Length: 103
Image (cartoon, rainbow, N blue to C red; front, side):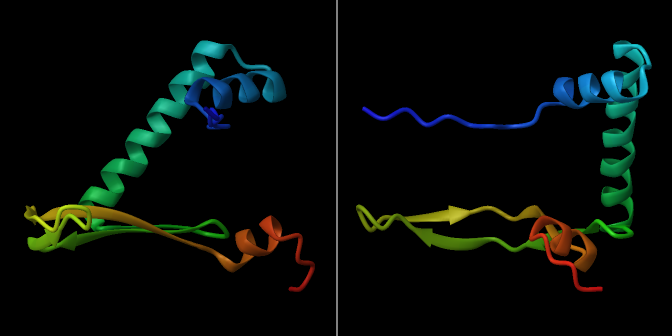
């Protein structure tokens, strides 16, 4: 059986990176990350959108209740109403990710 490995970035790894790059204590770096994420979440919840220049836009969209079907056994299930967070990257970020040198 083949195992799948994930290369996820965790808050702890980001805090370590900040610690090594800037030299601030690890506890302060972790607090900065936690506070930043809290601010981002609260802004998305209150404004339904968060724009970060040269990075992208987070949108909070409401999906209505609907009927979904299990393709294996063809049974119908009700999918409840929910909020979905979407992200659209800025052109600058997309170009950096794709090593594109156009302006």
